[in-house]
Length: 151
Image (cartoon, rainbow, N blue to C red; front, top):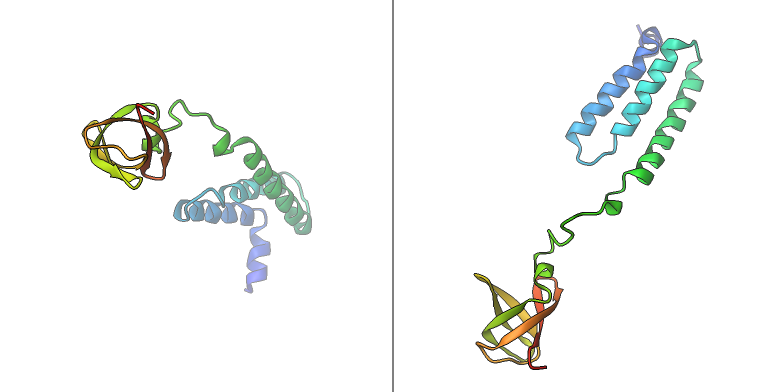
């Protein structure tokens, strides 16, 4: 029995087998790439079970549904569109903007260290002696940009 005969004998069940394979790939490969194609395969399988549509049209419907689901998900499930109640959660230094901190290691030639709670941070800004107080104005990567309080 050739592979074409096997595929034609399975009929609409080919779509469900494809869906299971795509869902399995989704669990192995990170990201949400194969899920929507799997959903499209299930929908076409249901369509093929309910009607006697030719396999060529099934492929066309599969392509249309797959493209439509990808565009719908991209439009309505954008991670950058969700608002967070903790926007600075992963930008730890940004949480300190506006805070007054103590210079731990003198800031000379624009670089030094400041103490924030029990942590020492790299700092950049105007020269300041150890023990003086500075205010965090912004963050540059993992470096706090500070300004002397008397400025």
